Length: 352
Image (cartoon, rainbow, N blue to C red; front, side, top):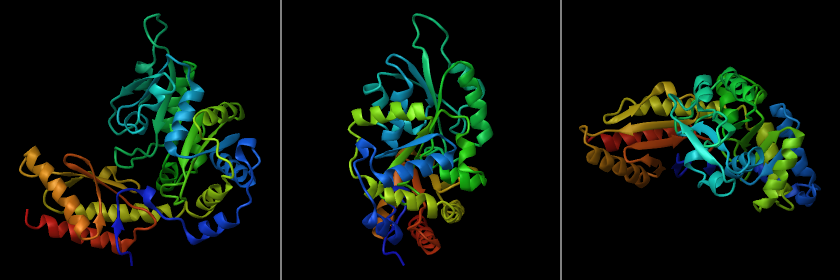
């Protein structure tokens, strides 16, 4: 039984006993010299899982995306991506500040660009206009509630981008959630992209790190960019060891997180003042709106009341907007915790 139910993010997972044991016993070397055997094993394992030639271990998903964008583009180019994407909203404008590229965000219906949207966003040859250097896709999609796009949808976007000689990057921070939810091998999602990142530090429960995968040539460029960003770690096998356990042991159990998220969404959707789009609850993220009498100020106050009230009941949740809350399930949240959370919400909303 957990004393505190923490639903703020799946980044809050704690390493398993097997991970801690693997970390303690990891064979290590200097990874900048490419001499850490455990890091090399993780990179090879990741590349094999995603059907790519090579992998590169980085400190975080944000670093993985930034390294990928900089490795694909040149200063003065433009990156096409979804308006609600993580790269555009939550990565501190790193691509603009460090990569000197411009973002071209496109509003989408469910977080995923369509081929027609990509085609319309690609820049023509014109001296006044920045050339398109990259297209980015996010799967699963964070701000749209953990929604998934299929390998076929990604392939259709890739065909348009590649037809214009523009590479495609997949921000797959929670890619294995999509693979489990859609019952498709992870490599199918990455088949037609030029680079892909995924996190071992979210639902897969490792304490640190992400992996970039792509061609050997691309990873050689990415390794240089990683070093430039200060991401050249030394005896990093100590943390890479947990990533290996994550890939080998923690993927299939993601289905439990998805079931818990669905149970939470269905329970909250029945409470007064809360709205949940059940169609968007495909993986481990539940985003719901808070509404009080159509009054934005009252809805904002109710949102704050829910966050504080749940915290007082030892349930941690996260407001992602003035009247919107996100809950994320993970390995350290079980069915009993979901029931406790529903009870906490019911007790708070009962007087509404």
